[in-house]
Image (cartoon, rainbow, N blue to C red):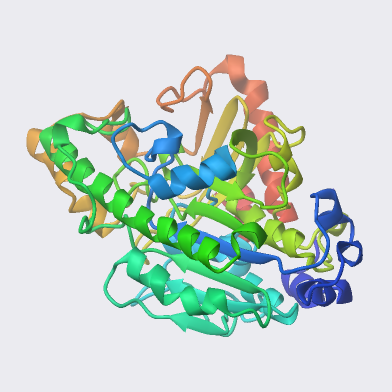
Length: 475
């Protein structure tokens, strides 16, 4: 395998094509290069972008994902007019680290945003990372960040405008973005981030949910404390949906519904033990709905396995601003554009994903790396000698404390001991064991699978310049 270029050599080599700036000003799609053309790019005119990021929403917690209790008319409307991805994955189940991936197309172990940005945690990306808003600004785009920001430094993740959080109403925040959307002097990129449904759960403006009506997922305990918290969480999901519904109306009112790419994702899984901060399925398998107004296919599903590292390349593909890079095989990012994949329900070549988590809070060092295909998933717990650390809000949650008070030895379907003390490798058959409770890493019958996935994981680390690759030799 070829040696990947040094990270700084790669990052400094990334530059926009001149065609990108022309397209941003309204030039024809023929100038945009093959990526945009293959994705079905139309002729001249603006190509605006809205990336809507919610805070800690599970994949199945929306009407369009099959939940009959949670009311999400905004996301349901987007899915009716776009494509619902069934296999969208964050690469790090922590807020800041995941958002850095969304805005850079780089895994956090390469960008340096290893964990939380705020307060004492103080993680920040390397100064030479070139982010999506910076690349789009160079292509002639107006850029605006609305709501939760949570990455650093600002010079790396710089936006031309910022809409401050005044209270926590997503609908009010959407209204505050109307003037930015309505201006027609140049195309826009709006990065809109709610603080819902993060703890503490805000439910103002949403319909109340009865705890007896909630659907308790298999990874959580069906106890009264959990049902009460899930009911509050459902209300918070409904509240964050009001911002999306209002933005859809604003796009229609301003004439931009038919020229705006909309990508809706959650940064990581639901804020309950067993999901957020873990790379188990509930922590990383998330909602992802995309509407490309230039796409012929709409209203269906796409089963491609994509990650949030693919979002930046997809946006740049849509606007015709894909930079030239120096990564292996000519790729500028760790991800790739999924625009063309959305045209099919089962596109070829989208059958494997990787994940890389290192920190959440500064006290939560627990690096994990994941490779997953259609059947198997391998988790490498690099710090497996340590007990699994708790995020402060998850430890204090009524759900976890209810388990502690009752002295329960299981949490959902997983033994509490197995949650807290993990082996070096966890291998799961995701088809036969979607709850990830039967570790096959020590099973002789799966030795060949384990070896193959270890090799693929190590190759991924080599490709992406992962400093933690040394742990194969030094642990």
